Image 1 (tube, one colour):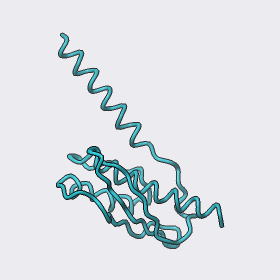
Image 2 (tube, helix red, strand yellow; image 1 turned 90 degrees about the vertical axis):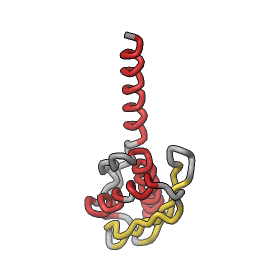
Image 3 (cartoon, one colour; image 1 turned 135 degrees about the vertical axis):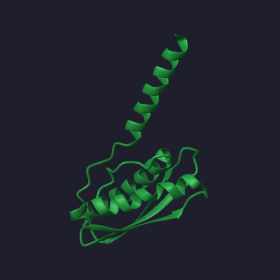
Image 4 (cartoon, rainbow, N blue to C red; image 1 turned 60 degrees about the vertical axis):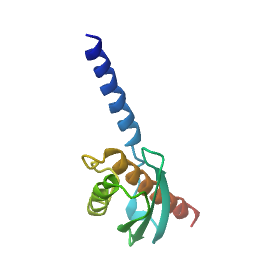
Length: 123
């Protein structure tokens, strides 16, 4: 009985932490100024994932991971880049088997887009 209760609590805690990490700001990409914006996010092991996001004519046209550890999870998680570019949003599903790394990439992309949004406000 204790094992079942402990497993239930762990499932709830993991689910809540993933939801908190995967909530992204609403960003109107169509109004962002053209440019390339950089940002970083810590992965689950506290290693850094740094990205460069290019916005052209109100669209995300390129995302590059410019720094990360060498790891199979990073390679798997790179699939979120095509999803973001295709759907023009960071609100995409994580890659199974690389959930935390996918979330770190998405968060770094979000931070880069927020920098672009700040620049838009200053214009």
